[in-house]
Length: 414
Ligand SMILES: *[C@@H]1O[C@H](CO)[C@@H](O)[C@H](O)[C@H]1NC(C)=O
Ligand SMILES: *[C@@H]1O[C@H](CO)[C@@H](O)[C@H](O)[C@H]1NC(C)=O
Ligand SMILES: *[C@@H]1O[C@H](CO)[C@@H](O)[C@H](O)[C@H]1NC(C)=O
Ligand SMILES: *[C@@H]1O[C@H](CO)[C@@H](O)[C@H](O)[C@H]1NC(C)=O
Image (cartoon, rainbow, N blue to C red; front, top):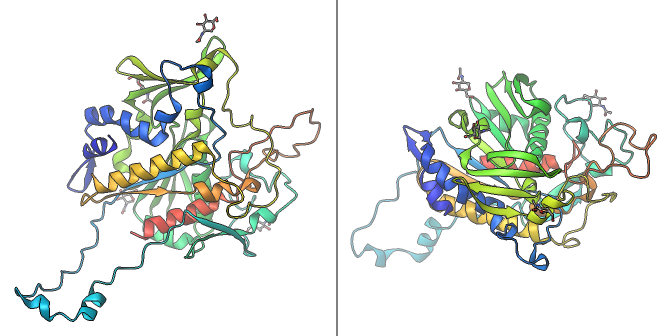
């Protein structure tokens, strides 16, 4: 289904052409796959004991969809093909050398956190793009050890973030982050990392709570933007029904907030997940096709980012110390499969490349990297019985910077 959706992408003169109608039709299935709705949805609602209990999803798997405007580098011509019968003369060793497979690309998705004394590239006052709720440093978080860890993938190394390398790649290009508040969190981390090298200029700002922003690094004519779109398609977010908030998601309609600009974008990071855990009604062609947590429409909302208790741990889990939960596992699998299908299908030979930015495991091991109560200054001053905790987003600086280290390598290792 995802493949069908992606076959509707066409490249004309290296321009990404998105035929509206087809995309609308197939976006349904792409989203179903991306968001694992087939595990989360039920319609009509089954008996309560069959309802999927959805644990808090800490982490998203983002998809990088990169539309290469510059043509892929020409491969060297294949070695001349020998005459018929020549193959018997081929020295097997020489052949082995010629056809020796390149080393497998590094798999950054599995590994462990190891101590690292190097300080982050930015801090709570050096960067202007840290959302208040994620500025743990400036809010007086007393422990700082969460800053001194580096992700060590199994069997290879993840190079530290290089603002120069990313800016070089981004020269005359536009990189967009589309998704929910975690997409924004990652985009803001990237802005801070890059700003340590070159000052960005905010050139566009639109929507409340910084929901759409665009910056340009004049040094490189490099553009980074953030689009708020927690379902990637058209939706009314947290509409009221009988006093309870829920989403209405229109699977057959674009979210024009970002789709209208997609042709300007050279690479996009799609990052969604959390909002699918909120009660929601899914519409297609004017018909309700699915419903998540429908029973909850009559009781208090679940899935809110701040209702999951505290995250007081002060150090990462060791490798294997905390297994992935059901939802994380399934969401990750779905995205990884969708990306593989996309590359084998429409991606093949088209100049479009898809990659899973698979941060599921590394994020799952970092309970110490969330703001917890340090979403604002002096959280315990005059607090009542309950201090609000954010155990979903990420402190900046913090583990979210590693997402961008992997993003950079994903972009460079083509
Ligand atoms: C943050 O970084 C700025 C600029 O690099 C530096 O002047 C300042 O001392 C740093 N602040 C802290 C608290 O480390
Ligand atoms: C600057 O970058 C944009 C892409 O974001 C590109 O369309 C434009 O042509 C670039 N300008 C120059 C002068 O190269
Ligand atoms: C959602 O769809 C409606 C109806 O087609 C349209 O008016 C609206 O502009 C769309 N919103 C977004 C954000 O795309
Ligand atoms: C909520 O409960 C009332 C009374 O049980 C029922 O009539 C109504 O249909 C329910 N609403 C939803 C959205 O399930």
